[in-house]
Length: 126
Image (cartoon, rainbow, N blue to C red; front, side, top):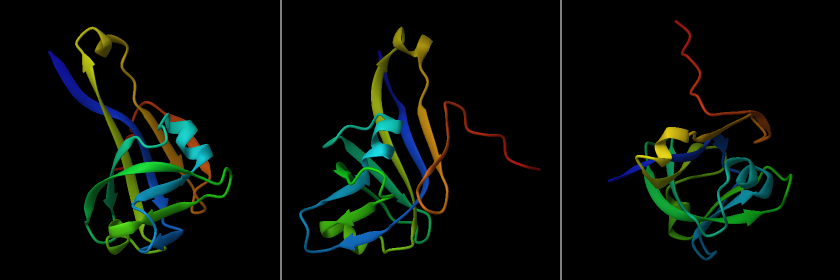
């Protein structure tokens, strides 16, 4: 049996651009892609914290160190500059692979610069 699990998450990134006329995808700062182990053209799910939109697209590399999160093509109707997104990638794992399973969770500051990378969601403050 295989289970589909969260592979990687970019948590609360800020949209820097929304390009309706551009070929569909989401351009993401190369540093963030590398930190999350998301490959160019890999399927990603995007959850817009501001408006509740949830959609699927694919990742493309944005300029390294730019903080870029550009939602492009038809998806540009679902996210605007300044919106906060959660970007997730999933993968299928066998039961044996799950023995060593750890997602890559990448947390950023307000400029999309990496603050912390971990495998555990931090406990919520009471």
